[in-house]
Image (tube, rainbow, N blue to C red):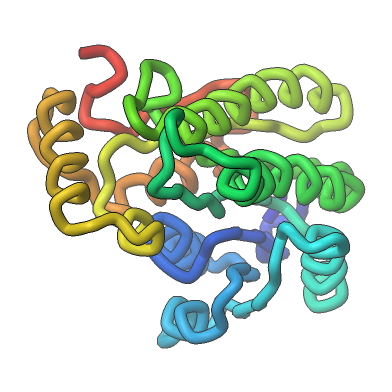
Length: 253
């Protein structure tokens, strides 16, 4: 249900980057609560795995960086379920480039996926979210509140998404829409594998992450999904504009 809707109406939740990692765990967590989940991603096979055994999840293959991608995703969700109660902007990519090697070609997919796509998807979903008095959850990174040597543009894009979270929270509050963010730290996901990092670089990154995580371990996608579902819950109806770190204490160390 949306925060002001009849309790018998299941909420409709749109989750991007739902084929693996945090997105998959989030889609399944909402489905376990009885929500109707539209799981969005570029690749059909991982989305099918996300939905397997979870009848409340509908896979939707789409490219959010395409010209009509955000509008098409929102249109598909509304045509199927008639509403959108929660939008989770989770999809993100990293690259193997750094400041010394960035090119226009390598920068473009980072900015388009990590920053521009959430902006345009939220814009496209806004009429539906206003109708349901819904919630936007942006997935950022706790590293964006500090620094990430060698991966500065990823961190910068996520930091920008945190600024948007606070700005949208104020802008959309009069329309009944809440905007929050969850900032994961070191989480066991395949994002580095998708970027093409060598085993040596993955190991170096993990060591750096562990050295900067007071709890001394890597987090699980399910732990981030728990935070997302709690911030999006109707019981959190007086919470907006917050960025919640789920990082084992990294941001305060």
